[in-house]
Image 1 (tube, helix red, strand yellow):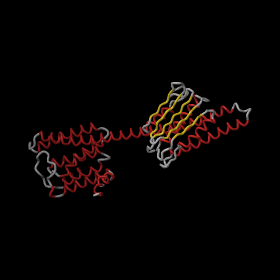
Image 2 (image 1 turned 45 degrees about the horizontal axis):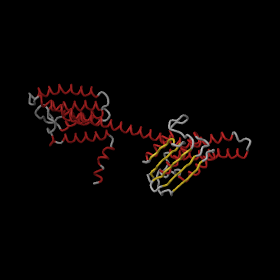
Image 3 (image 1 turned 30 degrees about the horizontal axis):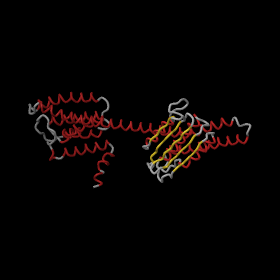
Image 4 (image 1 turned 120 degrees about the vertical axis):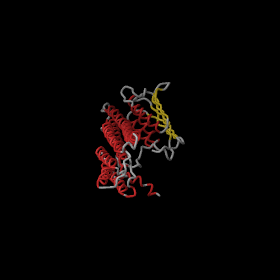
Length: 385
């Protein structure tokens, strides 16, 4: 039963030329069976004629060109139509006549250019054939019968055209999905680069600027330069981690920055001259999915904005671990930063809002009523990373 169900899949894997050739040979073999003689398409009412050498030629013209239907559809249709005309005018009426609607269906589904010209040429060629068969058959069939047969052939062409348009729509859909996927991946990479690079570089710039004024205090200057060096090393570590994520051979067990690294992040910000109060409440859940990383990025971006827009102002970080969510609140006494504010791209806060939204959480950033700036995020935990 399983092998039978796999037959359509195996059939589709076969090259189209071989599939059409197999179908043509099968149709040719059926046409040569004596019991099936004169059981094919009968158009015009001509009396049946015994097989001769020309009958074999007509059968071959109708069946064998089907092998080229995938590569040369117009040539295939012309040869099959010629064989069909010989078949009907001579009165063989072989089963191979079925190849004509098959060829029309294939041409309609595969022809990309000159479709209207091909359809018009076939229609014009059908008219003299119908007239010749009508005269040869002494009016055995009415003009309506010829029109009905033409409509049947047009229906086969229409099915092929529908298949072609369906494939084109599916290809366009896949293309759009690929474009959207690439755009989403580029946006994700841009967010990661922004989060990693902006924070570390901002801290290094502020520390380096402070070091310029410490030349009279060698000990403090050494501490400032050491902080710059440590920050640069952490930047390199985080960039390597990001490059590992971009590596196609990167496994699913990639390590993400845990909330435990928040203390290191806070210490780094303090060394850059920003007074930060850090509070962590609750116990982290065993499985938080991507929530840990998103919480880390929220704190990182908020502290980066505090360094850039409210340097030296008191900043507080509160991280609360609940049973099913992580709540992060970062407030500063300074003006903070708004998306689209001068001196900033606005990508950071917008990226955080998107990150939190993907996990089904809530994110807000804005001025407090009593002054200062606050970033708040509620991040559902336990989502698959």
